[in-house]
Image (cartoon, rainbow, N blue to C red; front, side):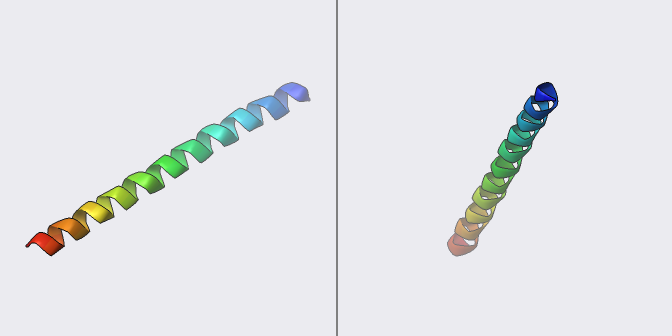
Amino acid sequence: MLVTITILAILFTVAFMSVTGFLKKSRDVSRFENLNRMNF
């Protein structure tokens, strides 16, 4: 039982980190596109 909880916690942490990293990356991309739009 404890092992299953530990594995689930690790999987949840990895998924959470990947999701937040993806959101941050897409936000940086949109900011970069906004800068390009302002320049041209």
